Length: 295
Length: 299
Image (tube, rainbow over all chains, first blue to last red):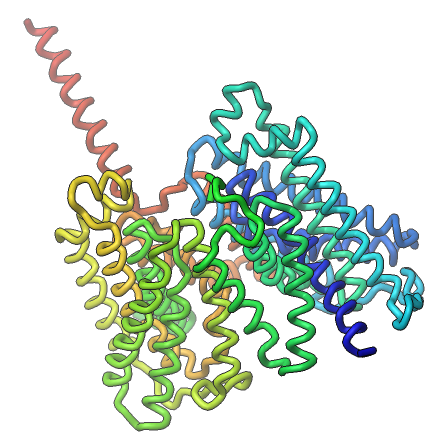
């Protein structure tokens, strides 16, 4: 029982990372219609930026996170403006943007390799809170609690932003039909920049927290998150942040339990089979709406 | 002659690998030319590659028989995949095919009896460049014939607009199913070619990296004509090798930048029949106007 609850929390924390990462990926896909292969590199870069902020300037933990988050957001905006903006007027569709994003993936990935010297780095042990907190029966590390809380805050925040605010309505409008949105006075430029920034920032948050939690800052950090985050987005439904959050947590828990009680060999297999099953049987995901036009 | 031999010593393997990649690019092109964006070529290649490795390694078959079986295996796999995937809308199909690539690796990892699992599999035979070239030429000839056949015409119609195509009596499902089968056969051949070239295959051989490379080569070369993927594969394979000679440190970065630049400035790829047609039409128009102007001046 003890082990069960502890693994439940572990799974929840891992799943929260997947979900944090997936939220941005889904946001870009549903709003801008881009399948962004470079999304994982934002997380790697954010972790690297956070790491150097700590190592070089000795900034406290929250500042390091903010650095990583903003770094991820700014890189995402740069990629969007340099790579995707020129394609928008030409209507090259999903494929052109996807190939461009592969290009950026290669560029950012190898640059990240240089930045880390092809090595695996670790945040200095004292630079982040890592004490164990006792909750009822079990002990949970502070970093896991931070991850779990971050996902809840980000999910609620972005959900409110999209569903309740004017700019959120504009984002939904652009996602549904960007031409019609532009005709009715939505400034798509701002929507594009905001979406790109949010995507980069959430991915960055997942990157920094993941880098700390796994004690491993590596240029391919984003790649692992990418595959699982992608699964979370598909299972949860592309156009609903809440769905991604719940599906991410679910996948994390399933993964940990499969590894614990069945076999580590099947860990990824179960996740990807779920992913394929959902794509074939229920492509709009658990919570997605049927009238999702873009995809 | 001396210079040629030097070149061959330095870049012979690059040429071989671009031929192997040309199979994958053609396989991706096969489905793309019918309007399907799919990464499943990786799966077909894995089927072909491991099938070939087993046939040669465990059953002592000849390399040609192994190629034949790989093609059959790839084709069968594609029939199954096509039946499942063709019910999906295009964007979901792209995602589902990516998921299938991820699952392929998990399956390969967990079937050590057939694939060697984590440790990979050694392939005890290699293919000569000439054989590879002949095979590629045969496959290309088939693509050339397909392009100019009724099937090629329907594929282009389905790609432009599936709804319109079905109103004039073309079945998008049938067209895309055939496209998948062609993709599977060529993908299986490519997988076997890869196995015999590398002589060692592991779960990582047939994974996301390959999926992205083949799609990038196809789109880079141009996905509207069968010659495009071959050119694209050649460039995309040769680019890193040449970059390595010029700027060794940032070889990958340069590859990425080249990819982005080509997509931004030539989004339809290098080989684009439409651009050729447009240029020809523009030239014709110019000549006609000149002639008309001349007649006006005379009259």
